[in-house]
Structure formats: C-alpha cells, structure tokens
Image (cartoon, rainbow, N blue to C red; front, side, top):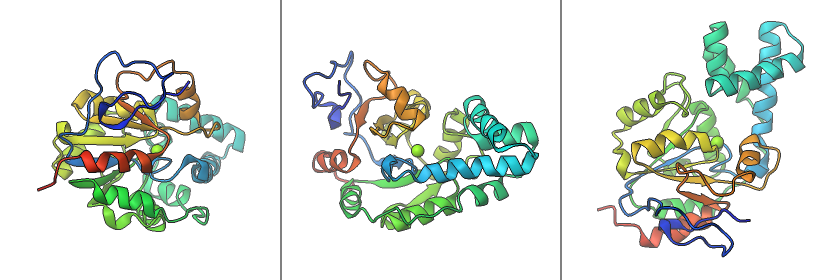
Length: 255
Ligand SMILES: [Mg+2]
C-alpha cells in the first residue's frame, strides 16, 4: 500500500491510499521552507549516514574504553532516550560536543552527486529556505555544497545553534524560530524522521515526510508499519524533487 499523498492536500496519488480523516495542511501560506539535511536533501539510498553511524560507535568505544558492540548499544540507547546520541553523551558523560561532531562528520562524500533538478525545484519555491539539522553546520555546508544546493539556503540552523537539543524537542524549535524569525504558520518542514515532525505540527507548520524504500534505516522501517500516516505527518513523498516541482507553480508569489 502506498502512503504517498499529493502536495497541497490534493487527494493521494495512489487509489489504494487511505482517505485522510481531515484535510492536511497545504502550502498556500508557506513563506519559509525548512529542510532537514541527512536522508532528506539527499536520498537515503546514498547510505551516507551509515558512515556517521559507524563513526559514532567508534568514538564512544574510544571515549569510554568499551568494546565496539557495547558502544553501539549505548549509541542506540542514547538515541532512543535523548533524541540524539550526542544528547545522551552530554547528559550522561558530560561530553564536549565539538570533538564528537568533528569526528562523526569526517566522512567520505564521494557517493554524493549534484542534484540540479532538486536545486531548480527548491529555487522556484517562493520565500526563504533554511536547513534545519541535528548535525553540525560544517557537515551541512559540505554536504549541501557537494549536492550543488548550498547557495539556495539563507542559513543553516544546526545542533549547536539549538543548544545541542534534538528536533524532537520544542526547545530546539524555539531556538530556531527565534534565531531566524520564523512564523510557524508560514513554515513548511521536510524531514525523513517522523518523530521530528511532531513539534512542527503542534506549532502549526505544514509537515512533509520524505520517505524511502531503503529498508535498513530504522525510521523507514517504522513507516512501513503504518496503515496510514499519523496526524503530525501531513504529506508523504518518496520523491522530494517531484513533490517540490509540482508545488512550485501553485505556490504564492514571494513579493
Ligand atoms: Mg534526516
């Protein structure tokens, strides 16, 4: 069963998709476009995050002097309990976040290709565009540059700017909103991890889940179990470029 929904609250593209219980929020009022970075602006199939994932385990093993497998258990446990592995390391072990972020983001980007069609679609969206990531600014800049997208974004709100609080928590959104003067009801957020859209929904943003059939990612495995998207997920797409391309001609003028 497909969970895909068309942009602007149009009927689902697949006839087998469930009818929404209420009309999802559209993009008529959207003036600020918030994009997650990893597995959202580039496809999960690139498997880039696997490198970050492995380096987190390596860092924890070295930091705590524990075997790799135990470090891996702690990494996943902290992710579940605190929203990011880093949050857990800071809370439980009083870790200095910067060496951790430098290490885990020191990855090979050779798998990434420029995405000119996605860039063109983003460029046509009316209004401001921001990257909102649980990673570091440096990582976001490197990746977005490699994708040929960096110049399209006004700024990057990274985990440091959010006080090292994950997007699962309202405090991260409060910092982003204050720093970038975002009116939530005029914002749309694109993200591959469903739980990161809960606060966005509660604040009145339009939410778009960028899903993938890449089966090894825990967020995508969760999505596959859904009979229909939860209320905080207004739209689902497996093709961000097409979704945005369909949206842009109907969106309001930025002037
Ligand atoms: Mg992501």
